[in-house]
Image 1 (cartoon, rainbow, N blue to C red):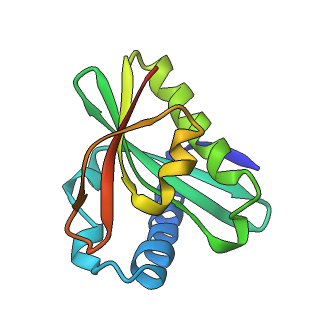
Image 2 (tube, helix red, strand yellow; image 1 turned 180 degrees about the horizontal axis):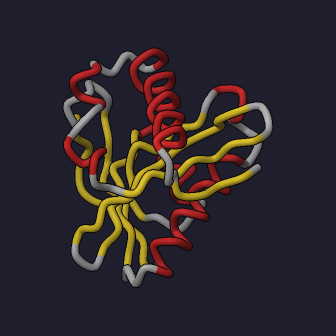
Length: 141
């Protein structure tokens, strides 16, 4: 498995294809809710193997914190460690960039996954506009 910043248009297109498959097609999130202005300026990460893309995430600079979002792993790669490896790579890259902490909006079903990576949930549950309940999670880097 290879994980890195999506530095080419082809790699970014692969990230967007993963997000489309997971969030729009699988989870039924409205397309208008999935894409935003941050996609043009944030860092995108791609996990892939010899058969193609496995997962993606993005990072937005928010002061001293790295806002991690749009973390998605294709069904064929779930349970293989690909999601954990992707997140560890993003966290390491955020730390190398000098961020003091990381924050993300977790779907309720994914909270245990992020807790195993050192994130702590805080605040109430909320709908981020997708129709899926989330909680804010944070960790120090």
